Length: 261
Image (cartoon, rainbow, N blue to C red; front, side, top):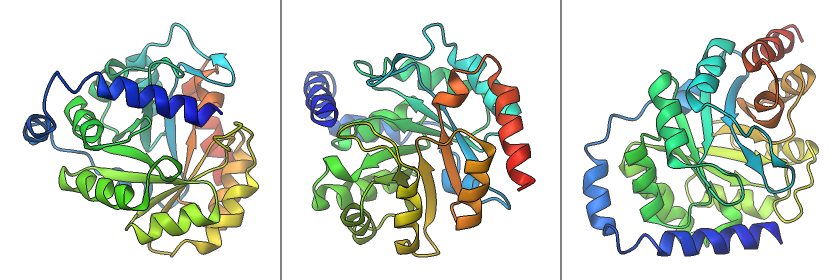
């Protein structure tokens, strides 16, 4: 399965960094990183917000943008009306890197999500050192106790935790662990199929004071408008933007038409 392969590869990669710096040292260094930007605040807007994603490749589709310049794409997303950025840092399956995050964040004033398969504290402190303002925590790859602990660690360094769910039991686990920012992933990470109805099925189960992000498969202004009407605060949009010849204009078009209903 895709998810198991990615998690196993991530665990080996993280284990290989254990000899570089102790976690305690990373924690101390993260305290001197530039102050985090308000990720959740950026998503609570009078209309639907877009988290625009910088993504070079995917396991299911291969390369999406081989020559991607993170700084240029970040500028285009900011001018296009994005409320925040998401940057893939997973190197093997998504061809991302920490450098992509560093370069993107330095180019704009938007808050930035580090999107990776986070399994422990080390990755959270590393993300903060790279300049991330939020991290992705995937319920499907974490035990309940681990999830609650990592949400707490993320908050301790001033970042937001986007807690990703795909089914009812995962959403329940996220809320029990204290998630205040919930992602509903329309993509099944076991087979990478996408169904937007996943968001509409889980949304009524989310308390109104929790910020909700719909992830994956959102391609049209009609998708955005329907999400907003249902009560979703933000949508994470990646492939349809990064594969566009003009991401700035494409994002402007999506937001403009979504606002018209």
